[in-house]
Image (cartoon, rainbow, N blue to C red; front, side, top):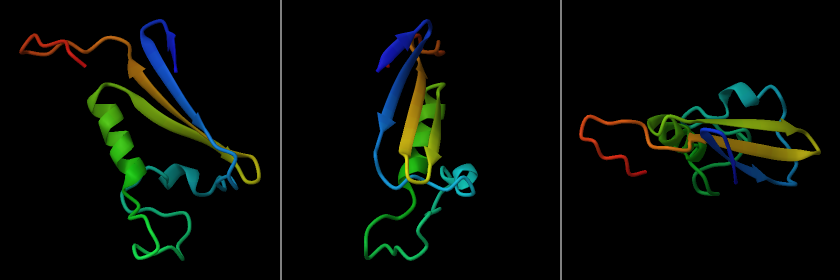
Length: 93
């Protein structure tokens, strides 16, 4: 994680098989799975990244992914370094 001005950036890298570019636009949709052969019985519901996206947005941030087949993936979470103002005056993150 690193702070860049008013933003905190958290990157998660893997060395997995990577994700084809055709799947990237839909990767954060609810119930979307790259591997259609996977069932809930084998693990995963296709909700994890959609939940991450929602939590990031609620906190005024974004999440993105860069990936190439054979080269792994990098997921980046960008969040405000300070809590957004709220009507209740509670600035806790």
